[in-house]
Length: 234
Image (tube, rainbow, N blue to C red; front, side, top):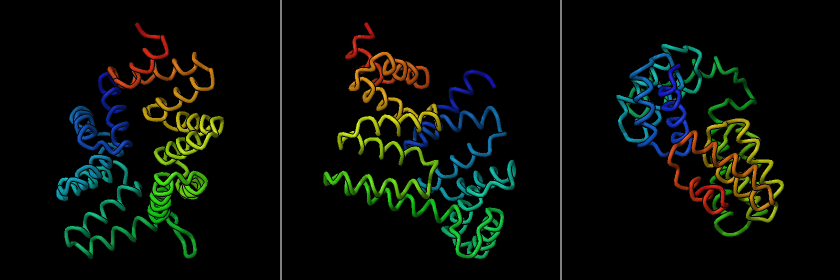
């Protein structure tokens, strides 16, 4: 893969995870114009289009993802939701049933789609607690969310922030580090990991993460500012 395409893919995924969909669309579109083999890129574009109310474009994107990977459960579930939103109820039900049959869902066991929904609900509750300064309750809800969505790096990053604000710096660092291992290009985690490491007196490690952010997102203002304040940038 060419370096420019790799960069567009990394930036598109990064903005998508941050829910900055306008920027994500710009880079993800650039990727599919150059290479039509990434099912997850089409799925992300479908989510972006759906969020914008462009249901026909969302449908085509999800269908493209499934042509590339017929077993892509998330894309199938997203397509079912889109069918439902456009009044194609029978197709929505058929697509949903097919997706669940492939996901291995069984009676008494949550399928991935429902688990993801519940995970986000717990995270939203945690956000409310956090805004009220109720750190213990917020942390507990974030952990409940992650028990259902272990790969949700945005939620784990919010957990780390809550731990940091509660004065549990080492625990916060551990969570930020896990996010970076899971998703090395997830900029918010690297930025905040750097801040936590600097507060812990681990300046060299902090600088490494901010420099990594600039490699992922050239010109990132936060990374540049933190490097300057840390005395590592002229």
